[in-house]
Image (cartoon, rainbow, N blue to C red; front, side, top):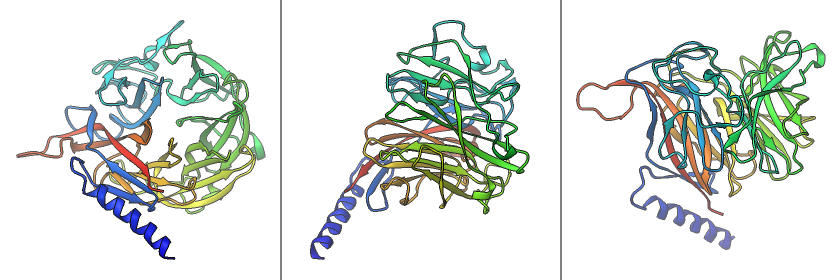
Length: 406
């Protein structure tokens, strides 16, 4: 017992010493006693010149184009607005782990490129048919080949998903439609399917991707799992991960799934279950649903998480820590040292009273160093003013150093 107490004193002393280190924008937050997370100072990546409201330069999604390049996609002129005039340029990309950003096409195309609305849109220009570009369901195969997809699947007359691929992360093939099985079990076919999160790849090369869609017969959203055994050239339906039946506390079913493959081969899927619409940038959400599979997604075990949010994101760090990003209200990170079975203390990216979509994302840019992305709307972006605040919309980045204490 005395040895155990000495161990805990050592951990506490280490945490206190880190808390007293100078030069940090904010002090460290201990998460579950096993993880220490130190947050830096936020910086603006994308901004408007005045308040623009919901869906303008927000709902950010990160995608790693190569080992060197990060891309950032987002709604540009309103949530689900697919045509209009762009208040901001799109997309943004960075070649220095997110320190500096520029607008433009992050892909070099080997053949015929996709239309402009899927590549690059200049601020002030007219656009149509916008749908986030080819930044979804990104995966790196065991061969090193990369495969990315578009957001919305085609379901009729047959299922398909837009796909691009690269052998070197620089030169990308022209988009092609790859076959996608449409789930039909129990007559509960979805009316649409969206893919908005990263894919995962097993050591054997099986590519897993989770999508979600409205299921008219169940009057809710449901999440579905697909797999590819040919490097993303076709996708086979595996299972319905969850719907309203697995999240009765929610109001919309199970959607916006985040998927991660754990070191022991388990698949972990975390899903949104509901968020009453406000449109004002300050609102609440229901508790997330967690589903775990030990048989490649054929069967699932469920748990209601004590964390509320929308569009959860999961990232397994090189030090074995699992990170979860979600928001509404505000934006927050959570960390787990046991594969998502328990979650540590919240690390706040933006306050609950700050107007935001609650959509945030993160990527590990070097071992133990995360870049987190979140948005703010109709808010003073500097946080400091002498007279009247200048309200605007913007997307922020912030670095978080994550350390396993023991």
